[in-house]
Length: 109
Image (cartoon, rainbow, N blue to C red; front, top):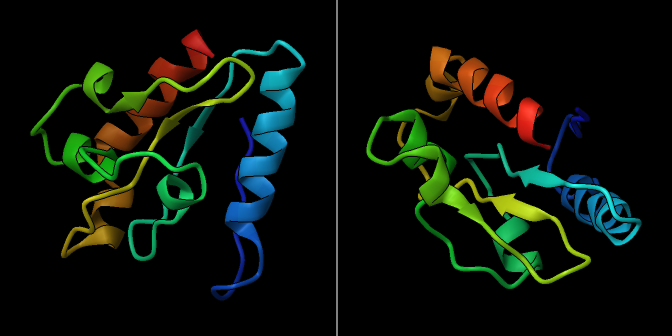
């Protein structure tokens, strides 16, 4: 499991995450890219995917994990987008469901 973070926007988190996970998927690895930036999500735009439901919807209990994983073309990672943008992203990031999500996907990817 890898995480990309920075102190401000525009430093290349999305660029690095999308490109690294794409290279890993092209090499035959099972890869899931989770956009956990619930303030300014961009992975869905970068990968030309629909923008919902996503991580925030799962964390508030409105959908299940299978419904938020977007399958991609062969050679690209599966993706969980962050949208829709919630009113409380910091609280959701600390939610116990986040740890449950990571534990579950770690077994599959």
